[in-house]
Image 1 (cartoon, helix red, strand yellow):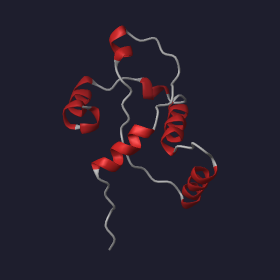
Image 2 (image 1 turned 120 degrees about the horizontal axis):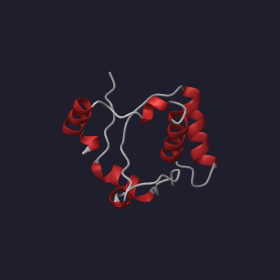
Image 3 (image 1 turned 60 degrees about the vertical axis):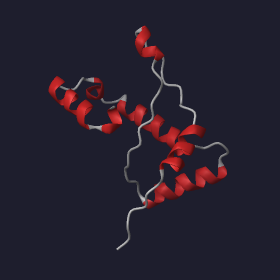
Length: 105
């Protein structure tokens, strides 16, 4: 049985430091919100072998290709087709997530 690989904080920090955030669509914000720094949150998902191979090929052949930015752009584009994604969570659930999910703290 193989174990899941783990990465040290230094590896993840160095990856995050060299990646610049992709500018998103222009959204009117309050002054407080515009001063906040864009925060990247790590999460895992799965893709088919064929998609994974294409991603690796793109990383090799396209200078500056960053899977992180492609993933962000693809998710933002897809979520734009789902109006429910902009619907706020019920307050009780939101408060629980903010309390218990380290990625939202």
